[in-house]
Length: 323
Image (cartoon, rainbow, N blue to C red; front, side):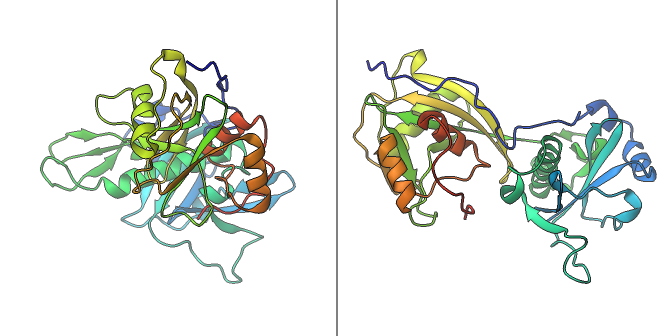
């Protein structure tokens, strides 16, 4: 068994794992709570339209545009109204709509732009990154949880947007899909990166996959490594090491990050989820990044942090938008 070292936890500065606001779940429960917050001029409202939210550049950096209730158009019948939490005594709520963002007369308002979480998540403050991630995650859950899986009856949102109920009172709670994502390291300390068929040419990242029912995270790491790339992970407990986790609301995942020690290096991709896979030394990866032979995942992703944990620091590359 190889003794190649694995990166040590925790992963730091995961862009979408930052959570400054107190979600204050007790404030969701009173039936009139959300309506009362809408009546208060001190409440701040985050608008999310088609996965995008308004942001503005300030001397302190990029910030979400949070408005008083009177400054926000009345929510439509299909819009989600959601309690997000409290920060320094200020309640925050969201209005999440499937409609495109509203237009302004001159195309912008004081430099305001509507941007997606993938684009701006890394630049936002801890509070704003947490608010946007929370609102987008819940909006995605509501969009696909419209009818009872038992009866087909329409569901109604309650508890300030955090529960959906059937006509007979049966409750449904938000769901998150657990997925592992892993830096697989060979006995000679190389990193395995794969390319999915739907990605642009030269885009490479670490492997990942969803946890199946009745399966623990470590077993998922081993199964996905073999299914996607034909690589066997060591069977000892120390061959799979947890490094950190990050929500990934595209649409509803929690990415649980690991480093894993491979005991085989022959690659046999499945051709479905992974079209190409390669082992990289640090020198090879740096050269491929320099020449454009490899485009890495963006800094907002835990995938990027896993690669950097193995690499030993920031990658020598300028970020490009994830497509």
